[in-house]
Length: 110
Length: 110
DNA sequence: TTGTTTTATTGCAATATTACGATTAATTAA
DNA sequence: TTAATTAATCGTAATATTGCAATAAAACAA
Image 1 (cartoon, protein in one colour):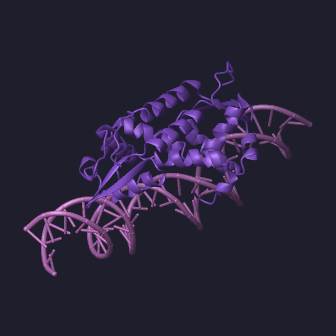
Image 2: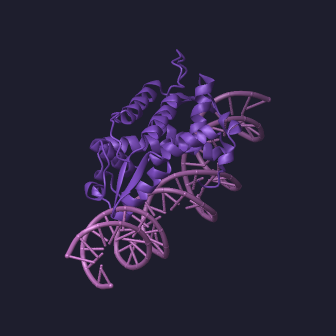
Image 3: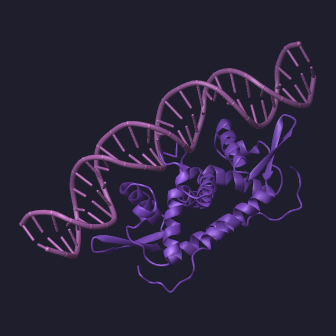
C-alpha cells in the first residue's frame, strides 16, 4: 500500500477498502459469479471456464478465501469452493451501509 | 492489470471490478466519508483532515472523479467536491445487485 | 509401488499503484 | 503589475499486483 500506514485510517475504512480491493479485479468477480451461478460447490472447472492459467486462478481463490467470501472444501485431490454465506451477508451489509451514508439531501452545490 | 485483457471478461464484470477497485483504498474511503459527512461541498480541507500530502489527495480525488462518484466545482482558486448523486445511486445498485446474486439456498456442501 | 490427477506454491518478469517533492497553472488580493 | 493561495501535474522511488512456467504436494488408481 505504498508508504501509507493503515493506522492513518479507521478500522472501518480499512475494512471497506480491503473488501473492495479483493472485489477490484474482474477475474475475481468472474470466479464469484461462477460459484454463484453453480449454486453449489464448484471445483477446478474454474480454470477452464475463465481463461487464466491454473496458478493464477489459484492465487485469486486464495485472496477470496482470505477475505472470507468463499471457502474451500478438500475432496480427494480436488477442492470444492462455495460461498461463505455468513461472510457474504456481512460483506453485503458493510457495503450497503457505506453506500447508504448518502443522506439524500437537497444540497445542490455542484 | 498485469497482462490480462479486459476482453476476457464481461462488461458487467469489468464495471463491478472497476468500481470496487476505486473503493479499494482506505484514503479514498476516507475522502468519500469526509464529503458524505459534510453533507455539502467540501473544499481542500481534505488535505488537512486526512494525513496525506496534497498531490496524493489530488491523485485520489482524480480517480474518484474518473469513476464518477464525486464531482468537483471550481470556485476561484479552490475546488469544491461533492457526491455525484446519480452516479452514487447507480454504483449502489450495481454493488447491491451483485451481492444479491446470492440466492439463499439450503445448499450446504462446504 | 508407480503413475495420474488436481491444486498449491515458488520464483520471477511485467505492470500498476501509491506517495511525495518540485513545479506548474489558475485565480485572487494588494 | 507582483505576491499569495490553491489545486493539478510531472517525475520518480518504493511497493504491490498480476500472470505464468516450473515445481511441489496430496490424494487416488492401477
